[in-house]
Amino acid sequence: MSDHENPVKNDAEPKMASMLDEMDVSNKNLQNIGVELLTVHTEGTVHAKRMSGMFRNVKWIVMALWSIFFLSPYLRWDGNQAILFDLANRQFHIFWITILPQDIWLLAMILLFFALLLAASTAVAGRLWCGYACFQTVWEDAFTWIEEKIEGQPNKRKALDEEPLSFKKIRIKLPKWIIWGVIGFLTSFSFVAYFDSAFDLWYRLFKFEWTYTETTVILGLGAATVFFAGFLREQVCIGFCPYARIHGAMIDTETVVPTYDVDRGEPRGRMKRAKPGEEAPQLGDCIDCNLCVAVCPTGVDIRKGQQFGCITCGLCIDACDSVMEKIKKPKGLIRYASLAEFAGKPFVPLFKRPRVIVYSSIMGLAGAMLVWGLLTMSPIDIKVLHERAPLFVQMSDGTIQNKYYAKVVNKTDKPLEAKITVTGPKSLMYIADKTIRVLPGEVGTAEILVRIPRQDLKEVNTPIEIHVQDANKPAIKADYDSMFISPKIR
Image (cartoon, rainbow, N blue to C red; front, side):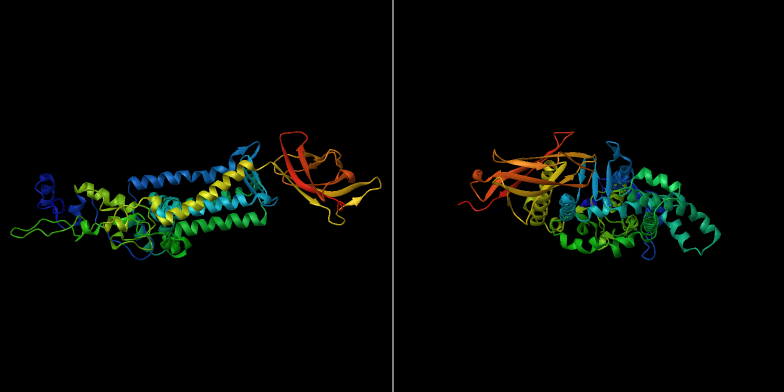
């Protein structure tokens, strides 16, 4: 055992030795250096202790980013709601992009990209999503922060929970429940506002004109938010979350997760002064203060190894580092590390790990397809259907006529005056509506008659092009390649 692992015999730190001379196993003496010996509760709701640290700051930052969820429905773009999933009209508006059912594959690529991002991050560092960005974790953190401000520290909150129902208990908890309810309502309201105009929702709220569906979804989702984040809390992560069940298959021995250094920390024990004539016990760096357990939002004791309930939030690292700093020991007794590191194996770069390669490759493919789709997506689209019966008609003047139906899709948020033209052999003639008016998100149909003199037809199938252009904005246009069908050429 190294010198720093034996606090009593460490002559290089006389101040630390002097401090230890005044300490025993009691709670009181350990509290003199800012370390609390906490009783870990294994039954009932986990009331986690909240303390500062690097990983706690990261959680605060991510929580602040979630404010985008509440603010986005109020962003405006070109006079309309910037982000609106209009299910009734089958339109998905994201700033300047309008996605219609014809381009729904773009949404599929977005979902695939983020699903693989979740898998890749899990392979690298475990349940990062759960620990920092999951809406359950973030909302639970906010709810327990409010609870702490109203009801006090964990011990007071647990004692209050164990008290029988009384007017005093209700009086203390009622403000918390009201604030929780407001947050739950704002959460559900914001969610619905992505599918309906946010300002219109507020306007109709005060006139009591919500539809049955809107009322049911907002009240139901708001109640669910309070129930899951305020009351069930860690049980959602442990007992309900499907990701918690499958993440074990997505990690390997190279995955870095919060890990307790057993070789350095054991045997654990509370520091005490050796009696005269007795040799000080050979203890590890862990003083068994249980602070790492007290701050865990799911009540996990990380010293027992990786467990199902660990959400990789790193709060136990903050707690342990604060204790190591107070007792003048190196930080990192609990740290992000892999099983391979503790086994003494060399570090494997990310680009050599099969899981990361597979996840990243698929994610990159989905991202590339998404970018390509956005760059090539036209504000209008045209599909042309050839008349099947008959395929062609021979006119009295010897020309061959084909009939087509052009389907013009308006992907913009403004009405479209679609002008249709046809090009092909020089002698080609066509008859089509001068313009057709297509409303935003709608499909307009135009009938086109194309004629070509028979003597000018060299093949049974002659290529032609059908063009559609906005009469008001010529830059908005699209083309479609089709075939002109004629009798067999003798």
